Length: 84
Image 1 (spheres, rainbow, N blue to C red):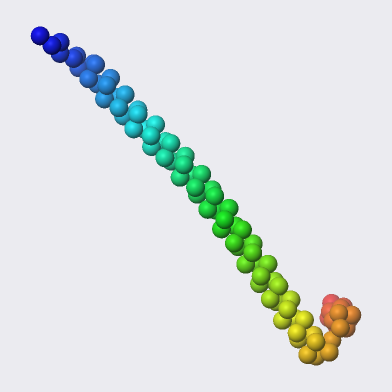
Image 2 (image 1 turned 30 degrees about the horizontal axis):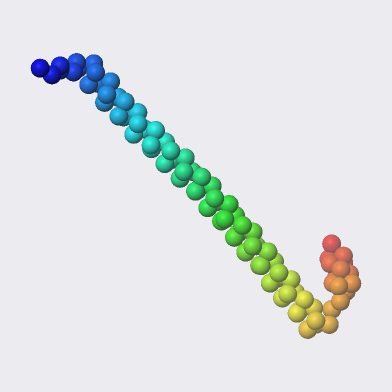
């Protein structure tokens, strides 16, 4: 005749299964955190590139305006010095 498992054995087995599930979830969480970190780094790089592109566009606009108005860098520096 088969021996019945005691309630303690059944509960210990259930606890062990829950521990295994927790360990699997912990691994998934760690992997997701790593993925998030990589995505945040990519986002930071994109934002830096956008900022540089915006600055370059502004400098290009300023240069075009200076050429259009026939203003040299020295003239612009002098104008800014007088304003301050």
